[in-house]
Image (cartoon, rainbow, N blue to C red; front, side, top):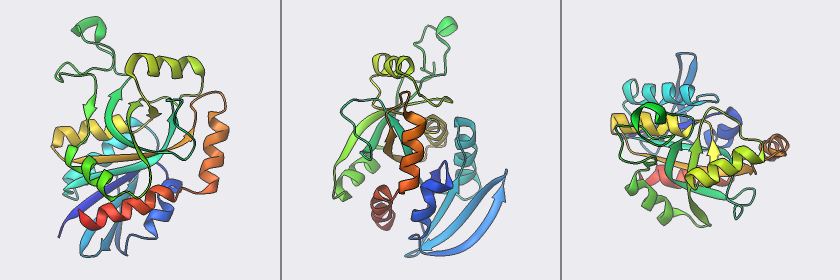
Length: 229
């Protein structure tokens, strides 16, 4: 039986998905995070709402790998839109992750955001899972780069910096923790994000309004992906 891990930051982002994951078999709290194991067509699906931030996301990813022995990790959630072509509720398939608030540039002769042991500032998502998502979707799924850091981006200066420096399309606060941890453990991962705000001075209002209206669009695709993994 395959075991797949799912990470969301907030329970508001996973509530609809949980209703469609099959039979809830087990709940357990580890490191103050709730892990719920479902049985979906003879697959184990372990879902955790890790809470906001890179460290929380990295903890959840580590536990999914070491405690639950997952064979792949999916991440879903709301993000800020940086690319002006993105509209609210657009879905973005994350091709690359940049950890923009990691900075060893003064000492290691690398650009801000780059880990010296990686050849690039960006971390590429699992190609096989990217192609699977493209194949299964029945609506527009836009490829994009996520700039990830422990900041809620909510002003034009921050937004423009991420666009100019990293050519980023979206921003969030968990992707780098998941991508780095999964990469180190050699676990394939896939991130599908949905634009909830424009990462400007209206971001807090847009985000809350979007959450209240419900996040169901990506859940439909998530279930299709889980069924064929």
